[in-house]
Image (cartoon, rainbow, N blue to C red; front, side):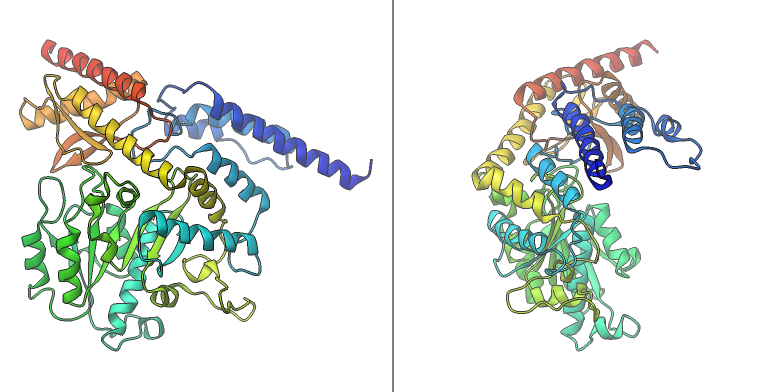
Length: 480
């Protein structure tokens, strides 16, 4: 057999081997929600770099064996530890093809199909989220980089309004840009601002209410304060607070911000998808009037990692902030769209394929139904836990987040210790996985319901496990 045909056979066998392992992992009964520790995983992978290379089949088999114990069941129906989608099989299959096709999605000439899939998926995405159709969309790694992109466009736009071209002149000597942001904004937004040169101490932080959203009167005071001044201004809001799921009052904020000449950027990593669900869309009233938005595909759309969307109403401001140009890169003309004009990367994977596939698979109705189902499941979990003595649900369950405090009837420090012990017990039990978060200086267990496979039976089994673990922890505390 000719050498090149043997290589083709070997490639096919290797890919099929990997596919069999992947299919076995995804079709096996849901695994307990537990994994080896990081130290154990490092020991599993460690060793001396081989002098000579090893055959592909052996490497893949060894990879599966070593990785297995350290894999969390994040794609299972009872993983509630963070706001992580379940990587739907349709998206997974599209992502396999994406990797196999190996398209460098820099421009429309190098990767016509990849660029085209983003063009169409972006239009569908704006439709589903009911955002301005003239907006541009950059396909990034996740909401952190989506906020970075949106805020980079914002920085350039507000400086341009006062006669400063930051893309040409940089920041040295530029008029200062002030940023108004809620006290309970997500850490990723503060990081994105830091990357863009906005130090934490320079931000105007707005006091928030019991659900972690900006108080209207506190926002108004910040907007009119001497610290805000009358120069370039950016306002950052939140659609879906990470602990409570609550929304900043956009109907109040956006108009006032625009009247002041501010650019409004919305961190909607998961909450922006409420706009796709008629029964929840009211939570996000006013969001559509903002100037830029950040959201994730690998949350409610269930795409594989990494996939996020930077959406900017002013496409020209978006392009000015992000375009990478060089003589060897073909220009885009007419209706052509180069993906690299809307993201920080030149070389990257083709995120449009999986997005297109899942938008088509779910359709508008399917996405709405999934969001509605998860929100109802969050409410059910809260209702199952609230009657249990010593347990308190700290948030108004308006979306998919449930914030649980254990030892709620005990002194605060004791409640912290009991909450951490209960979280550890739940994780060790393995029925479901949930993590801890500090809320207003005190520990709570945060349950994020967003995986496509989660059903009502999973919620009931998880509630029973959480109650059982709490009773055990409470009993042990009494016995000390």
